[in-house]
Length: 193
Image 1 (cartoon, helix red, strand yellow):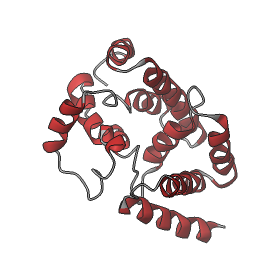
Image 2: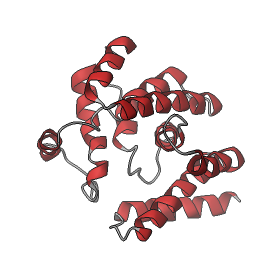
Image 3: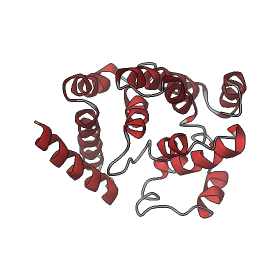
Image 4: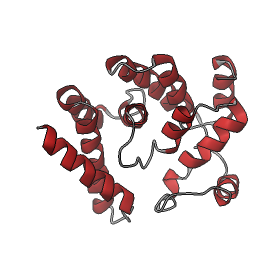
């Protein structure tokens, strides 16, 4: 990490809305908690959680300009709400001097995820969904219960089930990568039970 936490906090306050900043703080705290539970680097998890949404409030034209220069996986452009993840990698490098590939990968995949995520990627993905500062408890609790009872993959499976149900209920497109991840998690979790 090149920048101080104070610099990052000030940058985030200036570039995110108040709710998104609060969510970033919650994600950082939750990521540290999950890292401790699963034996990963707590400070790296906190830092990644703090900056994971650094591109969330960029103007659309700036986001689209950055996206044009990126090599993205199939489906990453499926939903505009996920565009900030790959753009966040660019911002993390440019604004905070991040060159840690584990941090950058966790930022990139914190919205859609991918098949065979690392444990570090999983905790950032989950922390984004279950932090308690801005996320409703009724949505977080089943995921937290699955996390306690079955571990990271069981919690991820609940997240993907909820996402797919929500997209179907709202008649929105489901990215193929989401289906692939769900199927892979389902097989993995069935083998473990």
